[in-house]
Length: 343
Image (cartoon, rainbow, N blue to C red):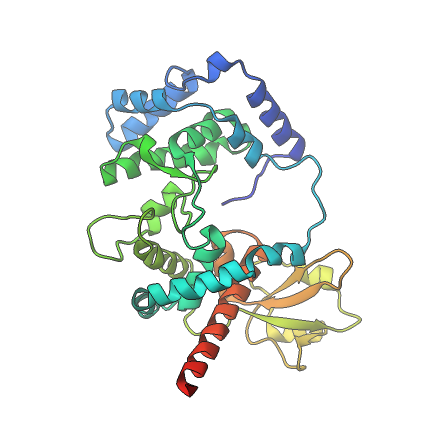
């Protein structure tokens, strides 16, 4: 999801104003001027009956908890890679991931063949997002998106697009707009796709004629793989590699080059950055810094596929957690296979 563009004080003020609005004004969105303008625009773009949209928004309710959850804290704690990592590289996600892989082995193999994305990466994303479908969220999506679209100015434009996409998605699937549940930010099902991403990247991977992210993982498996492929996944290419810096390396300058790979191996070598065994980066990369207070910063080469994972969630911590969980699952699966062969 795109980063906030407004300043932190503005975000906090917007949240406080939303929470301070009188309850009667928040009971329904259907008769608000901004909602009426939205209804007219969406009806014109997608040939909806305005009365249908008005009726749907009349069923949406302001959810103050959504505003609280999406508003960044007034004081951010220190970023800690080790704390973040520990949330996802745990027994629940590793054991659960191996079980999920066994259960959907054929579908994951088919997705790998069809889209070129390794099965372990698909499993890891679903594991990080929802613990393999166990934690998909229980917010009514229509009300959550209406709350953010009309009562959260810092990201209102984004969430009005998502609310519009929800109406289109509901019509495509023959469902009522208020029948969807998901995260407080409107993300849906096993893969936590926003409605616009469902429309753009979801695939009917089980071939039953509809997209189902709620009761079956198969469409999610194909859709995650398709999402990564569309965003530039390179089949067989590396994702990330641990880096070693010379004492004279200006790490801050290299990190500032951005998350998209732009540093070629020669440039990195000249700056004193190598692999742990002293070699050069395998390809053009970004230098990823993973900070933990009180510990040495970890540095990694992030290759094109690492960048592609950040298109799912624009965080280097997120992408590295996906990569490390994927590697843990792949290696555990290999070990289990070797042990089975020796019996």
